[in-house]
View 1 (cartoon, rainbow, N blue to C red):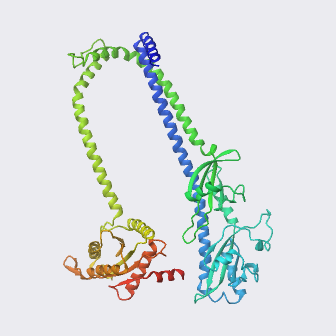
View 2 (view 1 turned 180 degrees about the vertical axis):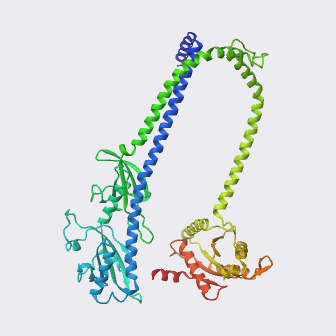
View 3 (view 1 turned 30 degrees about the vertical axis):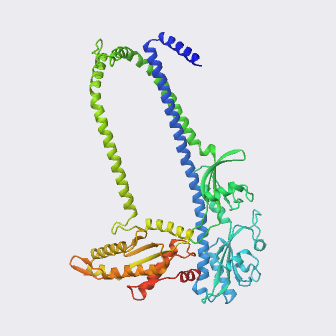
Length: 582
């Protein structure tokens, strides 16, 4: 192998001996130009393709996300409308009154929200007391899933065919069966007694209209949208009523929630984006999967065209570079040969350390002078390089310090130096997860300045700011290093107490309250008396998240305010659960 390499090198040297310097320079410059331009063009084409493809994928994902969001918001609105109607005070006496009057009210509701094909009220035995159009009135719906679920909670059922109701409706023009989404709401009287279930059947046509509207405004990208159930069945779109995804593929979509991928449909490569609906506000969602698909040839046409254009420009540039290399080689060959000969002498043992002056042409003289000057500046350039490296290091350290200060400003309240709402909630969510996992205790204090408006009105807003700062300082000094305190806005503070039992939490809350009451808050020469009320809540296994604990502490604060102020009130978790159930 070594012999073959040596033989190839010898042949190359033999060829070089027969080539002029001009030819070698031209060949070298041309080769380097082609390699560099080709590499840059290929790299730029690849980057352009990926960036353009990413933008297109983002656009398709935006279409799927928009359609999914509209579906969830529509369902959330319809659910809220049914719930509000069931809780209307004027309706309390109508549910058990005249069925004709009840039917009239239900039909008024249907006229207001035309998406409902049928709205009815069934008593606790499942008998339909009143319904729009009199449909199913007097019939039993006790066996229907929506009725059973509606007896216990607000329930939303997935898309289905209502056989009993469909038989009473007029035949559709396209002979397609009626398909509905059920919404059921329990109805109670003024005393809280369960009277029955208010049920509504939403016609699935509204989803078809929504999809057609999104497709009509997709910017002429041939986007096709589909709605799939959480089981992978196509509810709306091409190949309706078939299973489109299943197994690990479906599980991956549901777990990821949003994304894009490429698939083959009917022999055509497609770019598909998906978004799993997770609900909106009180609506928990049915995990409908909205997909938006575009032919890859259409979706990625701009990316491919951009890459091809860049490659074409690169090829043209390489040809121009080749032509220029030939021309440039003629002008630079002679001076380079002369300078090379002189440069070869520099650095040899006992040889010169400076180029000899060259003559014969203006170019050679100028190049000779420039190289001589360059050699003289090498020492100075090296010194400046070291100084530049030191300045770069200092600038990097300063940047790191500035970033740390900016991060601190983003996470703290500018007036008090305590945590702000956003940073506090992030820490609190982690603490709740820790307590739930390891069965630990935590508590939350809601602290509010008593008669704060009176302080502002009497002494001015500057005095109010001084009061807020003083109270924040007392709170910060009173809690442990593991506890967290934040200003939630205005005169309201919240404190997170980790690893604490009820007795200790009450003692700490009262210590903060009494310390504030005993403190001297000054604004200039004026002494401002300040007290606070404190609401206390302990974490309970039934709490869904930290918002439940904070809300319960806020309720405790409300009680403390209403019962005389300047006091601490513990809000038990059982009271909050009862309020939530009601």
